[in-house]
Length: 460
Image (cartoon, rainbow, N blue to C red):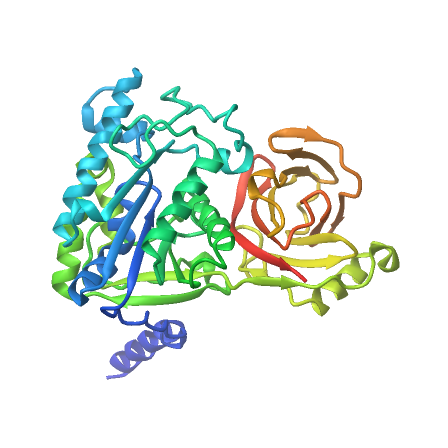
């Protein structure tokens, strides 16, 4: 009897944290009046992250459209496993992109959509972040690393022949938004470690800002696909729930869940399996998303006010710490490997500079490396002409790049303290923006310690 009671007590104690975890609220039910746009970086992402919402939208009679940023023609590992030989020639990569398009059509038809509901853009798989951060001039397009192509090669795609530049992608996205006028958009997550996923989110933020006076503001629901060690366990477990990754347990991401019934889960599994070019090598991973719910969530928008002057603060650590406390800063969750008991990144502003504070372990001094991307947006200036800034910092040293070229700007500074790293960047370098889109990576020596999700930071 005593052993049985002890066992029950241990069981309850072991599940106490689970029971105490806050309940994730539900996504709003789909209505017939909804116009839902799914933005997928690659063919299969829409099935992995949104097969449930697609099915429920179709059942409700809502309008649904799916747009694919790339044809997924750069996955060399999947190609080798599927085709039993490496891809060498340009035509082989294009063939893979065409195959993945056919797989997408089949998968979406299984979920109730028609081919007319699908739009394929065909921009370079694994190259869209480089385009967003460097390539905006049509005379100097990005060239795909493997295909050696610099324009959309798929004749049936929306913008066949469009150069691989940011203006092309942004124009396509704005054209779709104006025509479809969605009230709900499901897009790849800003914290996804796959750069194409993060980039589609960034392009959407720019497009919606450009069209803020032309279309009603839609609800945006990012879905997460790539996160190290998530979801677990792998393989198909239809009875399990999909919860947020552990690394986001201190994050302010506002998660929402959508429950799926058994038939919807099974249909989602079959839709994922339509992508034989991908499941031949990683079905164990892709099928782990076919569970009893889907998950969506975004960072809250950060707003910072200019607080005092840098000179008055004397650039002291305590002065800046007070500034961050005073400002309405945006905080991203704990950084993997940097101590998840503390917030990871916060923002502030002083004079005409944006300040970024990154928490770090005390021993990370000479080995502390930070890669920061800052993209300013102004309603007065075309985004193609705004500076795209990349700062590569190592300890107290840093280099600054604008549109891929190194520059020597005045006013950029760093403060390295035992538990924090503060980077100050003059807003003038960013084009005096209304808001800044940020993305960061933190390294401890040669190993990446954290990839920090993209976030929109309003400057007041």
